[in-house]
Image 1 (tube, one colour):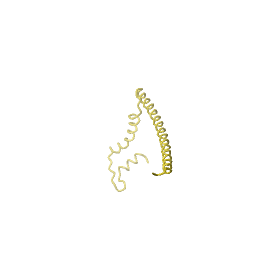
Image 2 (image 1 turned 180 degrees about the horizontal axis):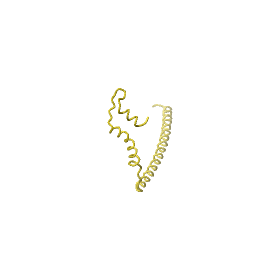
Image 3 (image 1 turned 90 degrees about the vertical axis):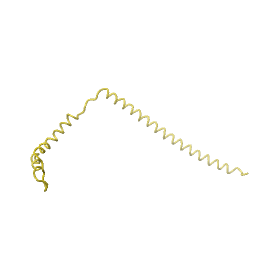
Image 4 (image 1 turned 30 degrees about the horizontal axis):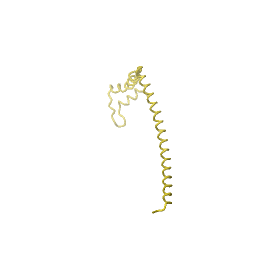
Length: 109
């Protein structure tokens, strides 16, 4: 089925509904995709970035990588500190238990 046949069907009655399309509307619908593709290719195409913009992007990339490295180091420090806290809390519990045992051995007055 060619495009002309499709547009001819659009002009006729379709499944009980009257398809009112003027010849101008059919013509516009025919050329709209072509105009859209042309605008996309030539109007919205990639533009060359200036050297200054590229330098800013490079600086931003380096800063981002540095921040990511610092974040990883801080995360590793946090994990180490949490492990140290857990060890110290376990030691505190052991010492409190020993204190209670010693206090239990001392005669009450």
